[in-house]
Length: 284
Image 1 (cartoon, rainbow, N blue to C red):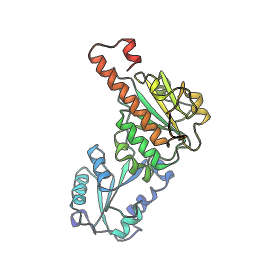
Image 2 (cartoon, one colour):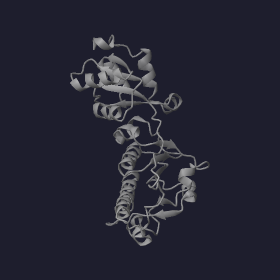
Image 3 (cartoon, helix red, strand yellow):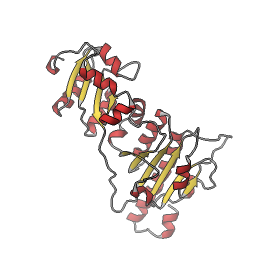
Image 4 (cartoon, rainbow, N blue to C red):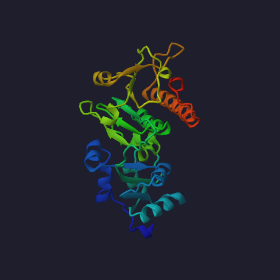
């Protein structure tokens, strides 16, 4: 790793201390930066066009992929810092680090909505489990949502466990803070603002998802907040068999998101064939 400079052996190095400070939510918010670890996740970030400001790479690792990733990041202007495995372990959030940890700025992404495509948004309302939030972010991207909003009481979307569960979606899906008192006008204008709850009378697949829509997903443990219920224009449920009462937030959100995606694909196909009547829209 000589071409990247001397190997850092002390955890008191200023770059190491800065990176380690990003494990705290307050610092991440102030610096607008977060940690990314792991070969696959780092490669996904680079493929999405993101560039780290700092990249720590273990000199003890024998993975050729690490040097290749480091070289790509270096050519884009990243500061590559070779470190010992001991130093790297203080930066990593996993028990068996893969030899690479990067500091990335928060992605500055805005919803890209085509003129003829109704927007689809997601609001995470009080979801505290990092794995649930990260999986929901990943599902939102896969289903074609235009943005995900993080409401009050929801865990930090840039916390290490959330980022790992998101599997690179953070670099492709706009993620914004949400305040119920000052809602984003793009979301507030949606014809359908559907909040998922086990006690709703309308099934999730009985509504028209081909219009401008927002899906509100609350915590399985605490349910929807009063503000979310007030903002919603409708409540929906996922019918469950076998005496099951509920699904976790990530699973429920995924089910609803891909029903919306299914309807939208069918609507796009019908529209391309000129079958865009009200009847076909409501029965997409």
